[in-house]
Image 1 (cartoon, rainbow, N blue to C red):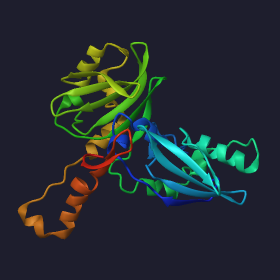
Image 2 (cartoon, rainbow, N blue to C red):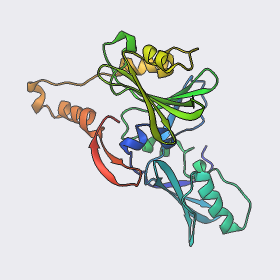
Image 3 (cartoon, one colour):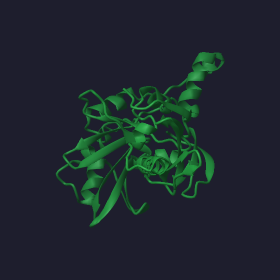
Image 4 (cartoon, rainbow, N blue to C red):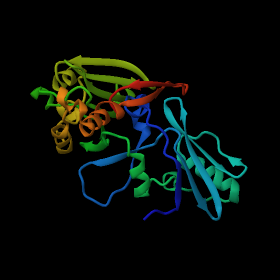
Amino acid sequence: MSKYKVTLISRGEIIQNLHFGPHTKDWWISRPTNNDATYTHLYPVRLGMKTLTTINQRDFIVTVVQNGFEPGYLCQSEALQSNVCKSSSEAVTSTYQQAFSAKTRLDGLQVMGFDNPEICKILLTDIHFHPYSFKIGTNINLTIFGIGKSNNPNWKYAGKGYQSSFVHNFRKTRALFFQEFSNKEAIVKVYQNSQEAYAFRDTDPNTVWNRIGILTQFTGNTLFGLEHEQTKSEINKEQTLTCTVEDWQNELIMNKLFNYHLKKFIVASRDGHGRSRSVIGRS
């Protein structure tokens, strides 16, 4: 049951290099579920998302903006407006406290409607693959945000388009490990302070993680997320749609092909200054 009545004014945009790349961790959030699943689905914080929520008979409008490569949050209520904040809770709470001269703290994600199933459903409507996360051991939270398929058993049949990431220390500094496949290699890129600091490439995940030399209690396939049952299921479901010349006049088939190969992959891309450009890429 949602705590607030929230109106979604704008669902915003999915941005390729923000939502599906090394900066992705801040653009997806997990919400509590009632099941005992071994993984958690994630929901996008979309650039330009705007919501309206009435609290104590006063309207609060929250907007997602770009703050470098991270999301920023603005909250407006009548003549009051917050600074660009790193969290929705900070933006909403600061505006609410000014409006009512109170010390009350609010959950910004609830105020934005992230506990509302209908709003969460709308946020996912144009997303081909629904990212999810799960634990490896006790300290690693791994996110899978892309699925690709190959014929390579050493990759557990994942392929180009597969992407996963997690945060861990590397050489005494906090780092984000971004993992993917090219056509021929398993790749691990290490980001520190939002910049690519190291890149490791080899024939398969186990070999590349042997080169990195940390987290040796886990196999490379485990660190890539390939051993998890949900990942295996998603790889099995991944299929490439094709057509013959005879199908070109079949509107139903061609619409399916367009939706699979182009519509879902034509997305915007932005740099750290918020400049926009159109790209075609896997989402």
